[in-house]
Image 1 (cartoon, one colour):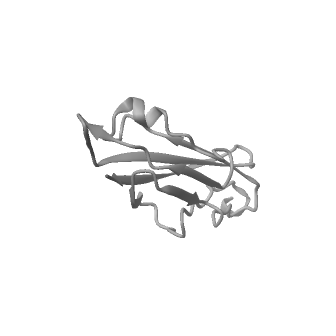
Image 2 (image 1 turned 90 degrees about the vertical axis):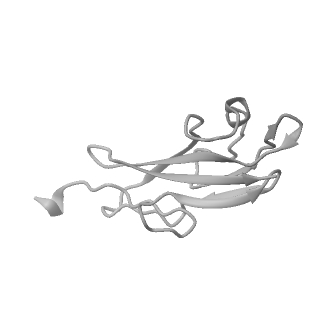
Image 3 (image 1 turned 30 degrees about the vertical axis):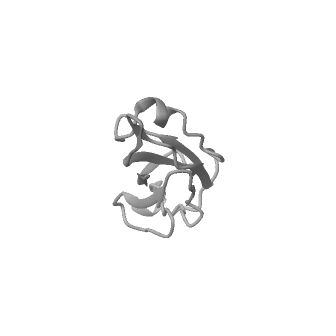
Length: 122
């Protein structure tokens, strides 16, 4: 019965309700805040959040991406500082991919994901 089944969470990032990746452009050293506070569960279950950097997808140096600190990674809202990227001695442009995993408290627990692609400018 559809009405009695558990349904996946609806993930909203920075007001974007689509399922497409969210894209942002920021300058190196700029603070970025990502918010999933508008996310919801169609069945009214409690939601859990996990934000993480996906270094394999980005174009910045892997060590730079792995060093990005996500403040509030287990909360609906997370912040980070856009990393300094270099090519040789020059500042460089690149992308950083941040993924949000949202899990509902239903039985069975269901997951939903959103990707944020942050273009970092020198």
